[in-house]
View 1: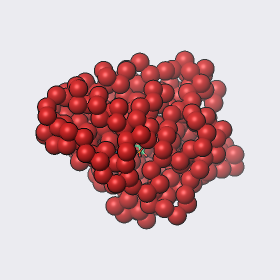
View 2: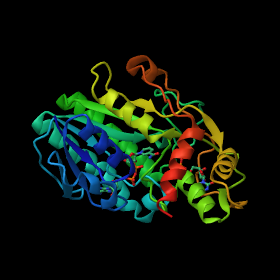
View 3: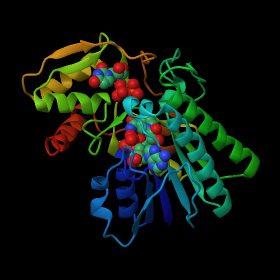
View 4: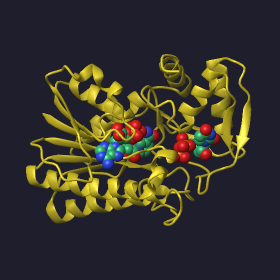
Length: 308
Ligand code: NAD
Ligand code: UDP
């Protein structure tokens, strides 16, 4: 197949491009390089099955493709809050442009949605039928509401225009090719530990997240995209739940060094807990994560040792 990956030079996008090329597909990677890097895809540039297009998803684009994976959007809170209006435009207009293209060329289109659609959840763990608890006017809203609106557009194009959609809700994922200054917790802690700096826990560190290793997630993407039983939304993530204090201690143990833990103020609207209910993915895709946190952290630490 010929497959378009928007945001293909980013952390998840570049790992997905690798997987699709290895599976024998032709890949068009579209990216504006806001948080993506050429270094993530340099090894693919001479591959005749790979094309790179510098373009912004808020502007329309045309390609003859069989599938579209829409991943373009900054994902780390400091990056998506840097220009919040642009973040909403990227999610909403990016979705409209992908859906318009999918409708014209009859391509199957995949939306990288997020556990942030559940906001600060009052149901735990979060199943797909939970509608969420999202602040519509806060610092995180540009991302959360942008992604919620994108989901709305996907389902309206599906109902109104029979567009063949797949909507996946990704929970915190980590691994090689995250940026060292990305701002997300796993890369922050690892880079701090490797540089001998103190690990910055926001708040008291009792808030929880569930961390999925990138290879597990990409396997979930491909299985979900290529089945015809469900269109989503479907949660994808690792249900192992850890406090930020536990994560910091795990990184300190595995990375070594003399760093200490320091506390910094908790950002506004920071969700207190998060853990996916993955029964749907287990049942339909026969998918569940294979990489335990400790193993994934070891692999990610090995990657960051080559970067910092
Ligand atoms: P990332 O920041 O590494 O990748 C995003 C990519 O999109 C980058 O290459 C960036 O340059 C590109 N991009 C941003 N705005 C664009 C625009 N307007 N036009 C074209 N390209 C643009 O982040 P990631 O972790 O790889 O996330 C990829 C997708 O998955 C995002 O849509 C994100 O919301 C979603 N997601 C990720 C996670 C996670 O834990 N990694 C969790 C939930 C959802
Ligand atoms: N966090 C932290 N120290 C950091 C970066 C993040 O304690 O250096 C916390 C953050 O407040 C949140 C959790 O780690 O509670 C996950 O943050 P991240 O930005 O990785 O993802 P998200 O909040 O979007 O789930």
